[in-house]
Length: 367
Image (cartoon, rainbow, N blue to C red; front, side, top):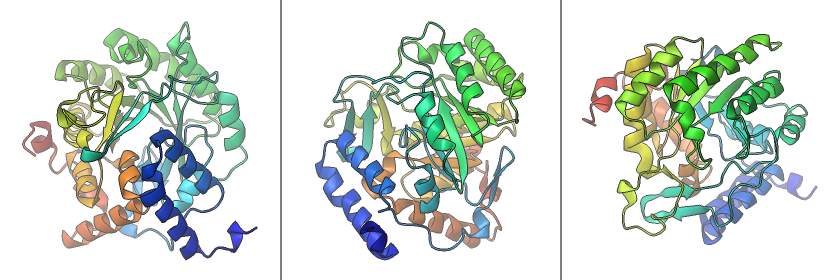
């Protein structure tokens, strides 16, 4: 009751101060938990007014008021999807969720590379499992497109069977599903990106989708550490199916952008600002291979200019996460305002008119 008495402005100020000041003094995983708790308790700011029409986007048949989503990894257990939607995201993706609960890797497992505004994680799909996430999602209304990111338990005897269980469980609740085969923190998982394994995975996942009560869009999330031959193979497999889209990309195991910096030698996947050039080049290269298939660009977006670059490279929509660790939750508002300004400055009507306008340059590494 005390929290409900706070004005929206005061709630926003409290959470902003928590994000920008106190959180950076905490251990990263503790800080993340505190942010989730603050959102759950109603301290989050809420978007004031509707999104500008310049941001309206169609993604895999989903009508988004804006093309910016919260990436998977932030709300692993479906605790705050409604709050994230009210914050102003056009879509929010929970998970990764696995059939059975799992603790993930030993702590510490989340590290800031503050000098580069990067984050390294080796969380290991820590989550409370399908049942907990399902119960939370079926009891909440989310005023944005809701994605469920599905994965496999580390000790599973059959990773593909775990993904099928995810489709069976969440198809009725999700607006879209993401098949996450690109985390570097589950041994053997990235092997599902190889030709034969991916063919089996997508065949069984999409067969399960066909048997569901509704046709939910299914996206595949890939790694940035693929070479062009591997991307050729993935594209061939994808284009032979009715997969709805691809998310490019997950975290990288590379360390060149942060070499010599504090925490740079920690094992795990690197995200945040240092990932931007590699993830954006891979996005453009995948755009060249899949034609008009919807793509979601994620990796390193930290301001309106890097958000715009993802569209120019070929993204139809984008996702954020790590940059908000350093920029605060109001980073979303700044990026949306900046994108609207760029649309108007260019004499265009919608952000979609930027999609793919610089694909060749990004793919060739000229930007």
